[in-house]
Amino acid sequence: MTSLANIFQGIENSALRIRDAVTNEDTDYSAKSNQSGEIQLKLDILSDLIIAEEFSKLPEVKSIASEEKEEEEVLHEDGEFLIAYDPLDGSSLINVNLSVGSIFGIYRGGWSAEKMVASVYVVYGPRTEMVTAYKKQVRHYIYRHGRFKELEQIKLGKRGTLNAPGGTQQNWTKKHKAMVDGLFSDGYRLRYSGGMVPDLHHILLKGGGLFSYPATSDKPLGKLRKLFEVFPFAFVYEMAGGEAIDENGGRLLELPCSDPHETSPCFFGSEYEIGLVKDVYGAN
Ligand code: AHG
Image (tube, rainbow, N blue to C red; front, side, top):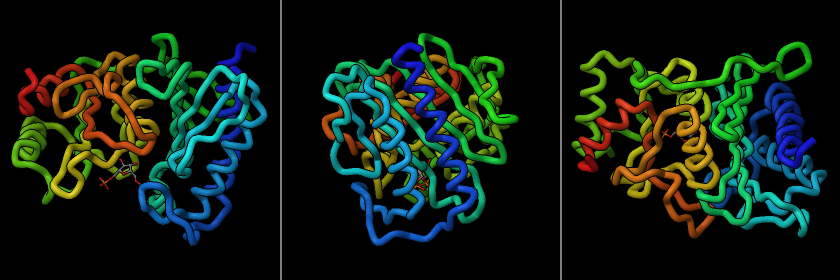
């Protein structure tokens, strides 16, 4: 197996262990909080440990950075790849039994977006699915009868029907609210669970739409973290034929990242909806 195939296999192994933990363990809070100040669930910590343990078996993984840890951790000095991950995104949704996910960005030669070589996410819902973006292909797998079975590749249409607007409405800017209202007036349907993984997966599988997490009055730099959430999904959306931009209309994948826990306002979608964002935000 190639080095990257080993990493994908390590992610599959982690995913099955995390899926079991989500199904069987309780959702108590721990006594700890993460770098972003959020109190961690015991499940966040367990998922983080599972992934670190699986990657520590792979000599190709030089170093890992987790949303749940303050610092990057070197696993194998001679390894080729750096992996940033959010072990259990949306974990506050587990006790209401909504879908959650794990997100991975795989880099070679540095923690900047242009060094990303592949990205992967896993959805833990009624079914467990995995999506990999690598070499211009977005592959979709479903766990069935003891193995991940490959389905059709994912491709976004030029224009979709779904609207997933993140953040608290009262903290949106006027222009953002006008844009979201405009999409609804145009017939777009609201699809927002509050879990980035299932919400972006939904848009990808239904052919297109817009997911936005803008700058808000309470979070002027957005909420979602570049390294653990924004860059991996930008990579998936671009490879699926969509676009992923910030509020200035620039590609998310060209943004600098000086701290692993840095955030950015972000917009992911198909060509038509991203064009609208650029018009509204004055980037066209
Ligand atoms: P958390 O991991 O703290 O539950 O946060 C989830 C993230 C992301 O998955 C989702 O897109 C976003 O927060 C939702 O935030 P809002 O509730 O502010 O829209």
